[in-house]
Image (tube, rainbow, N blue to C red; front, side, top):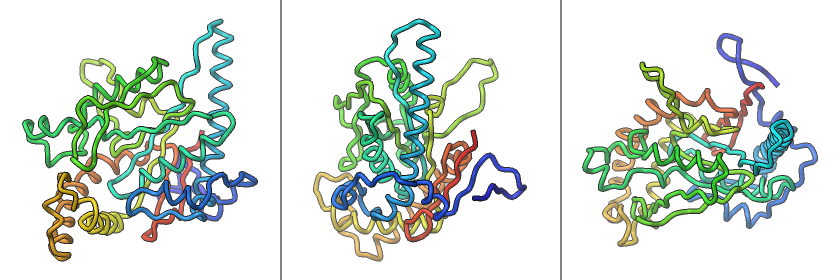
Amino acid sequence: MEQRTDDGLSPYYVFSRAEWAARREDTPMTLTLSEISELKAFNDQLSMREVEEIYLPLSRLLAFYVAAAQKLFRAMQRFLRTEDAKVPYIIGIGGSVAVGKSTTARVLQALLARWPNTPKVDLITTDGFLLPNAVLQREGLMEKKGFPESYDLPALLRFLSDVKAGRRPARAPVYSHLVYDVVPGSTIEIDRPDILIVEGLNVLQAGRPPKDGKAIPFVSDFFDFSVYLDAAEAVLERWYVDRFLRLCETAFRDPRSYFHRYSILSEKEAVETATSIWQRINLLNLRENILPTRQRASLILSKNENHLVDEVALRKL
């Protein structure tokens, strides 16, 4: 295990894949091959070996963190002489489009739910808190969808505040990737889980304090632990284009799809379209808003071009 950055000073412990895999120790594999296949998001790669070597050690670490938080909560109850219900442990997962956030979130949810001290693990994505397309179009923000300004941040902060306050149930809006919009009137209920996983592009973002000194909460202020999924820009672009091509052959063919018009493109046209979207929107968002938040994460999973995590950085306590 090494501790390194360019200047020799780092807030992280940095592990090679083999070093991290050894931290699994005797943690049992609780997922079957068929379950792993079902957890994998569209066009993502996930093997039994990846779960065993990367996600089992991470679930073991998180089980320790959650148990420690639960113990601290009980100590606080004794100190305050209260009977407050315990609050959920919130895990944030951030990173670029096409990096595999959804798969990571689903795998962690499945593994953590099998630990005895965390039987109830819920998962939401911040997509539901995107402003409706009608609002984005009116404000000229459709080309900025996924950028920080395209979210209903007050609603997201209220939701996380409700979760942390133990209000039941807290409700999150639902997003449809088919119609590329928030579903009016549809919500997901989150009712005091042991763990809540929050997955999204900009969940680790912070901002400058206002000049008047008033406190502004950030989404990451509600996180007890955070994970950033990292990969090189060229690799992310290839994964995005590959996914776009597969969608042209599958989901985009549904007449209800917002992107149905792309289903008639030739392969060459589809590659050109996906590359343009990546460079014009997703790459810009990555460079301006997402990548700068990487060093705020509790844990960084760095992927190579084969979708495999080859380095893990864990923030020191």
